[in-house]
Length: 614
Image (cartoon, rainbow, N blue to C red):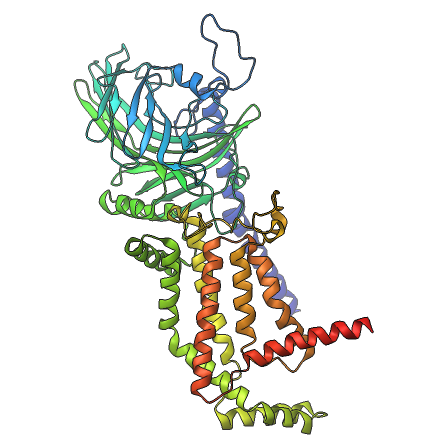
């Protein structure tokens, strides 16, 4: 009976714990979330076109076709040409050593940016890379700055026509935009740009009215339509940001669509309130656009996706804390916009000189950044020394070989000793053919006696794996490697070898299919790998021997579609390994049976063919 009472009391206590825990950890948070969602939806219904953070969202009409100009026919829903969209607004030109484009005076947006030093192909006569395009085109992409608030009278919108005090925005020559709202507020926007990819936007509001106001400065990067992405797991493409203590945030376009509702039924997203330091933006493989708030002031950062008809609109935005504007006073907000190429040294300089928190993470160095960053630094150093990234890869590979020489030497010495005791090993296998346990014991005694490490041969391969991955990552993500030539036919180290054995390396008048891409450098790599494997005796197991024989062929086809720089590295590393192993084996008095093994391979192939015919 006592036990029954005890069990009943324990059951009641546990039930209370479960109920209270459920209410505290599950039910209450759900209610709060529902309240927040309802409040956000209500705010969105009360203020159409405004997110819960108060940042304006462009109207559905804006991203679509623009209204036809007088005397022209309607475009019947088709996107405008870039030229027609640019002509809809008076503009000031952007002219720097790195950028060309314009700023729309209607709306004050930076919506026309091209990169002067980057082209779509290796041909310098090919079109330049276009980063930003205005609303109304097929793929609008732009940056916007402004103020939000209540009871302040009209605020600048995408329809506001600003006045400019200059016609060209260039380094050292800022342009001031101005507009009066007719209710006592004067807005000024001072635009400046450096010789690379950074814009500085200084927004000022002067209150000439009789009432105090509260305004919130904002900036955003907006992209209409989901762009084509590479789809590789080693590369992030989509929305990116560093948000205070929350650190790096990376959202792919598909990931953003899975977020909860944000301000309305057609909008999804996530916000990080009250953070200090960082940025938000949208990144491609080589290009990016980022809104950068004042690094010393708190702000709310947000990523959103919304539907405008059949078009998805992706937006990265920041809204700073409230600014109070007393009558007769003025307030200032300074923000920045990065719009350009993700050059490593340029990104690092911005982080250092402008104190932008972790701006270097704009480049996707990955989890193994402690390997990939030094790898890039080494390649970049020798590039500036020799003027060729291909030569830089060869030099860095040689240095790595020298650096890991002690480990490789121990490995090759152990392999040479193992080769020297091959007759004794074969004798042990024969003697204990029916007793695997004694065979293993005898082998271990032999290894101990001769001071042989049977797994030492794995070290050169294990060392090569992180180096291979780091080089692959650097070749794949850094713009410095894009369109970087080597010698001869290799004009882009970040692209596969353009030649193909199927059309005799260009002698036959047809293009080889992409799914069987086998160029000259992959063949060279395969040959060096085959020679390196033939430096060692064939495994006694016939199955293993066959695997080792076909491995170079498999790797040749597998690496055929890899960046040429990576294949060149692998071939050069194989050649250095062959030379190193040859020297070590000769120094240890072990015969190098390379030629014997090669002859044996081809002799077996000939005999196998003869046997098949008979």
